[in-house]
Length: 524
Image 1 (cartoon, rainbow, N blue to C red):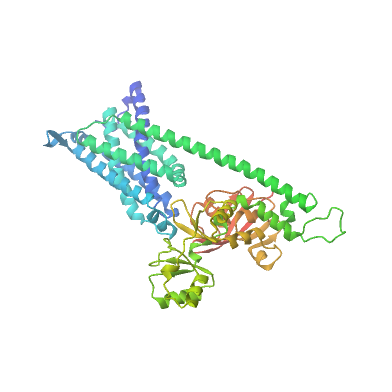
Image 2 (cartoon, rainbow, N blue to C red):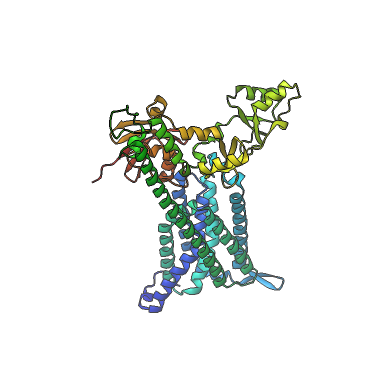
């Protein structure tokens, strides 16, 4: 088969074959691209683009090399040996080996994503896979999918040049779509599970085909298409819920602003009234009926439904714990050095799997009765709340249970922090913006420029800004918002534009943003 033969350009059938082959190569490459996106997600954010481009480039090179060895590929269909009255060719062995590899990888990835202990703890601690290991897995994956893709091309088209052009166009289009697809896969964990299910199904089909059990591709693509349709409907429903929530949030914000104007005795906005000092009696006929402290408390109550419980909790890394596996002397030291009235009980240093809480009051009662000290008997089970539970719902659950402390967990049951009734009351009362502590957290640098502690809640920050920052489900703090928009590890000097705000990272400690500067861009 000649390498550079252009006579096919005069054949309409060759052009139709080229278009069809490009479409088929893209379809065959989607599963390859999805798996590359999943593997690249194991790397640090700064290396993911390089791994994705390198993976697709290797796939292109491998397919072109295999196309060049077309006669060898055609010979792979000859039986090498027979077993159970079925002749196994080189192509069959490659399909069986590749299918087993896909089954193993898809199963292990499903296990990692379904097991909260491995799926989240490693990521929270900053553990990523080595670049060379991920690239090696991508190369092995490309080898499996390239064989299937090239054999399909050989069976469809007679001209080698048409095959190569189709493969180059298909991989080029996948390269352009790889970054949006990778971002989409990273933002939607259910899509990852769906794609891993596809790869598991494809692996079984490759093994079956290698053993002589032909499964029509239409069945596979029909099942995949139906599953994707269901997932799209799920995403559509969730997006509609988010929009409805955003509209409700906007109505709530307007209502809260109207209430604040009403109790402020004028037409000033919520932000303008945030730090206003109370007026003296007789200063103005329009004087505020309520003082500044009262207005701040009302504003705190009105914002409760918009704040998740994770915005006021004590983070897991800041908790005081008592280890039940430690000697009694060590436990006594842990209890003595803690300034909190309640400690989290753990075993073996595992903060991610707490056993409950130990109240110092019960400990004192035990000591006063001169009973033997056994911390295991003093462990109590607190209330458990999801991290996206609003403050209003949290108060309702505290009231029903009679508890004073709660564990805050994510959707996988991993401990994120601890919250108490006192934390919620402190958030409602709010801090006077004129105090030294509040000014240290939110400092006005110039007329339209602020320097803010990145750990501050976005809802609280918005009450001090002339234009609000957007709220989201993936973050509650200002630092979380910046990381969500940066899509990479934060560093000092990193900049991101969010609506009219230009945000610059001013201080970072261990990949955590400590302080940012916000400057409002003037409208053109």
